[in-house]
Image (cartoon, rainbow, N blue to C red; front, side):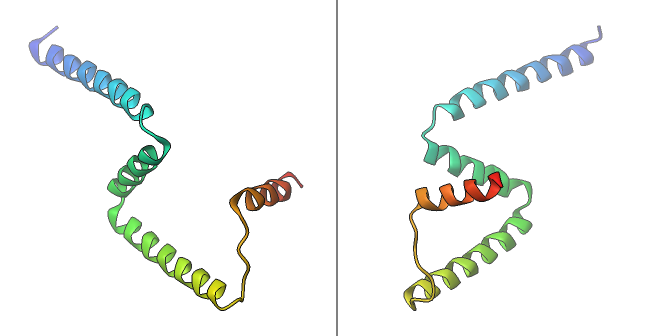
Length: 91
């Protein structure tokens, strides 16, 4: 095997090992920290598209908060919302 092929092969092994170590370290993070990491990685894939998505969710959140404050919608707790969603998806 030539030196360049050996070097490329070693680089791949190092990167693969780094990925395994990175994954192990990430799994030790708290759920909140993992969510932050996921968000950062996702944004790094398409920062322009993510910015547009973030802006759309910000507008939606503001609209929902305003509707709640005006008494147009009611708040329900997360457990109730997820149970209702699960029931709807089961049908």
